[in-house]
Length: 380
Ligand code: COA
Image (cartoon, rainbow, N blue to C red; front, side):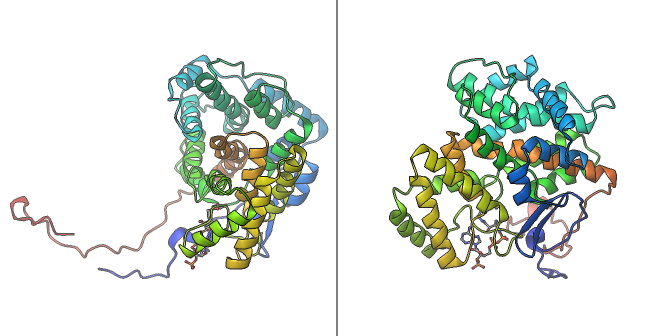
């Protein structure tokens, strides 16, 4: 067997794989900025639509630009009939991430990228239409209705919540979901964004790049962690039970979903913001059990492992308190991250070079092919 000639770079940890103007992650171990703006300020003072505009177009919008962007997104919410037919054919038991992956790909056959329909307009279309896809499929299969997915909601967050609950959401709920979309919007060269950039670097089309991102986000080490964190938290009836359970899992060397991060060293700056929303929604509803359990898990992880929660951990409680079914947690991450993925695809295209790294070969040395009647079947 050949030995690797370079240091252990598994998972490309610590490797700088390109340049970006879109965000910084983990400067001084904890910071996050989008195009130079701190995440704390964006989450407090802007809306998701402003952040999407910022990522896609380079500057925060003026009031007039924001107003026309909101109108444009509203006009982009409806689904073509053939796509509705496809959503109806998908199994009721499918994971909504698979519904989005398929829906995105299918839309790419109906509204392909052309000179008249460039990447930027596809980005806006996908941002507006993903909640519609999800909720059309959801209601068709789970409440036996073909819902009207259009509507005059002012924001993507309000649109999603109204379609899900079939009533106008209250302002606190909309603001909480909107803040989570801001936090999920962009994160430098994370796995799904890198996948989208790799697809873009082959000069593939916009939908292929976004579909690659969705497929990559699905895993529990990445976007799927918010669903996995919820499954963990919900097992425990109270904080004491959580402490016992987490200690047992740590003793068994199991990973606790929603903790740790590849880049941040001291904390995930998004966590305090989403924790604030998890606490606020829990207090408003009068049900703090999940939040109390989450707090204790957080304390145990800090005490025992020195690990901090990432965005996905308290997001699980926040989304649960918004009445969002668990399988929609990661799809909401898609809705938000589409802005980041799309901005990265546009950036990749602006100065493209095929992304094609190399590997250290660790297989057998070169050898002759043994004729089939002389093979033992053991030649590994
Ligand atoms: N629970 C328990 N231990 C953890 C842990 C967790 N969530 N995250 C990291 N660790 C431990 C590992 O067991 C390892 O310990 P060891 O050195 O004794 O073997 C050490 O911390 C380094 O972890 P590793 O998985 O190698 O780090 P990574 O940079 O490859 O992975 C994550 C980063 C995010 C994939 C990892 O922290 C993880 O799996 N977290 C849970 C999933 C999650 O929340 N993902 C969302 C990320 S935003």
